[in-house]
Length: 526
Picture 1 (tube, helix red, strand yellow):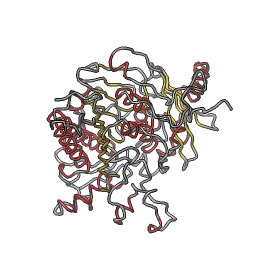
Picture 2: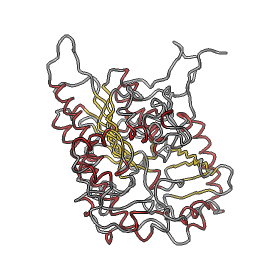
Picture 3: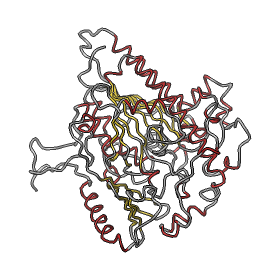
Picture 4: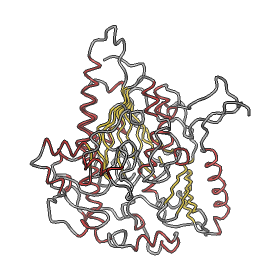
């Protein structure tokens, strides 16, 4: 096979993936042999943290390399501006083929409730469910944030919409009702009607939205493999490398795995969540209030193990599909020329500390995510990096590997300032991947604006501590992760940790300043 001057990229991301629920991460029962094998072939970062624990803000960071402050997507429901430079666009401008399958979630999933649907501009709401259901949207406009082609599905499980639904109705009408009616295999428990929505789904694995997404990825890989095998001529003296992103929308709720995966895990075998009696007494008041809400916390407790068993089943479905995608990469003959990255947009509380979902609480299972980089013969194999890194490092690492500059927009021929700040707040992890350096910043900042609750959280994670500050409040959170890795004892008000808290608050301020937006560039001295 020909060697590209620049490597290909195959990105595989999951949605709402608890960082402990992987075999290589040491989970006692979850089976992920294909993802484990990928980790054995590359570098697994065991302490990778999100920049924001919500879908759209985190995905905006993966695309742009910017903090929540930088790309301005403070929370779900805010679209990423079309004018903001993206990592895929930089690769496309440098000659890459850029393709995407699955869920982007860079624009809003709903249209404004006060605006009649016929007045909604499809350009502003191309991912919105109602526009797809009405038939006004049939494909995403391209290039889409630098992506030349997108095979689109949004939503989760039986709540999915997009090209997948059109395909299912057309190609498999005899099974379509299993999707549209969310038909269960077995009589569901009351958890079917809770916030978590847990049941065994009668839809065949082969027709699941996740499998459709991976099938489209496999189609692209077959095409790229055929393209690489064709002889070059004067018109195509070199092949364009590819950037292919497979965005799986699971294991996000609804927790509805298909057979046989829905039967793999027994509720009796599920490890208990991380929690202790009375811990709400030492935590910010909104956490206890969330737990007390119907279908949000305490109502789910009797079904926690069932929900977790179904969550594990979805992860095993993911692993099966990841194995299929990686086998297609091998079959294409392009494995040696392709960087494979596995990551997630954010975590899932999964009952830890009585919580479900992704916030507003910055517990470890929500803000930490899996992150693997693999490139045979180029990156270290079987390495585990336990240093603190951030998803802010995702985009600059990809561009560094590709040898493509970070997009800075307009700038003068020569620097106006002597000590110009880096264009993006993250750092390239390439020196760690190649073993030439082991240094990281040792810090990760997590931002989270919860407009509906009136909360604004800022978190700093260091090698030893996790500090969370709430704007305008005297309460907060401080955990010594060395002595208390399960975050069971909040030390915010502990007089013995007063100096540590003060130092960490100062470090949080310093990190926020250091990661602030450095663009646009200075064009003159005045």
